[in-house]
Amino acid sequence: MLSTTSIGSGRTPFHITDYRAFASAGAPRIGIEMTAQYVVWSNEHSAWWGPRRSGYYTHLSAAGRYDRNEAIRICVDARGGRRFNSNPSEVPILLADAEVFWTEEGLEERRQSEAAERARIEQEDFA
Image (cartoon, rainbow, N blue to C red; front, side):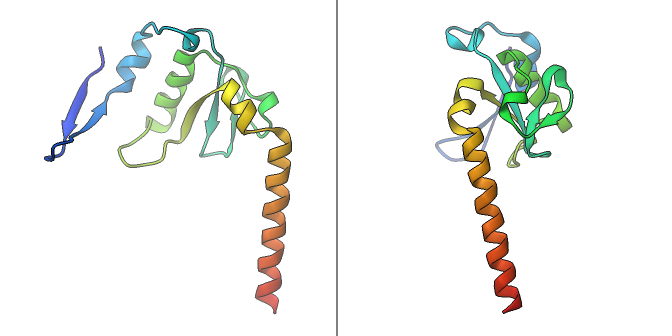
């Protein structure tokens, strides 16, 4: 069972949920979540987790595929999990969503754009 702690004194309290309990319980879910594949993005390494929790990959096509519970378990366990008001070090993402959002072409465009921006800044610094 999930444990939730309410904090705050306003009409809308904040709730902190203990997701470790959820991840370890393997709670059944209804719908696509049970059969869908997930990938795990590492904010710490700016890369995808590899297959079998091994290594990091910059290309989505090389990323490991996990079921929902395993992806959440990875993220909860990584570096102590997410801390209140901090960015998570690891994030579970539906593979179908990642394939739309992180296309290989989009990654290359982003790299080229970042390189052009760095070059522009260096030009300004020397001017």
